[in-house]
Structures are given as structure tokens and as C-alpha cells.
Length: 116
Image (cartoon, rainbow, N blue to C red; front, side):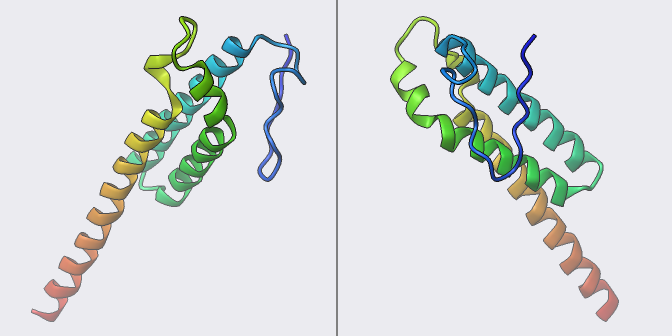
């Protein structure tokens, strides 16, 4: 089994570089984005929002580096339509934004409570 580890600041390898089929590559990227979302939600539940933001950044990197490939493959039968990274990315961004806004509201309420 070939394992490829992506490090921050490095480009993702292409399917050609790791010698796999493009559909399998795209499915793998979509699955990685889904796993990052799962991790981000777990971190949000543990009040580790800064770490969840790092997961969102990694998801954004996946989307940015593969957008053209997904777009070209979007109408093919093998395309991972139901796990398209942009949808996963945007849902996670929304969840994280909601969490950050709730934190701000809680802090503002605590400040107001102190003044009263």
C-alpha cells in the first residue's frame, strides 16, 4: 500500500506522480476532506476552535489544489459527486463561523453581566 503524507506548505502530489487513476485520486481527496470535517467538528465540541480552524485550512488547501480536476471530472460517472470537497468545506466553514460567533456572544454577555 502506497502512503503519501502531505505537509503544510507542500503541494499535493498529482495522481500521475503517485501512479493512480484520477477517479481514485479524487475520491481519496474527497474522503480526506470528509475526515478533516469530522475532526474539525470533534475539535469544536471540545472547545478547541483554533485547531478546528487548522482543519478548515487543510480542507481549503485540498479544494484549491484539486478544483480544476474535480470540475473536469464533474460529469463523469466516476466523479465523487456526493463528497465533493467544496460542499464539505462550505458546511464546515459555516459550522466554524457559527461557533466563533457564539463565542463572541457569550463573551459579550459575560462582560455585560460583570457590569451589572
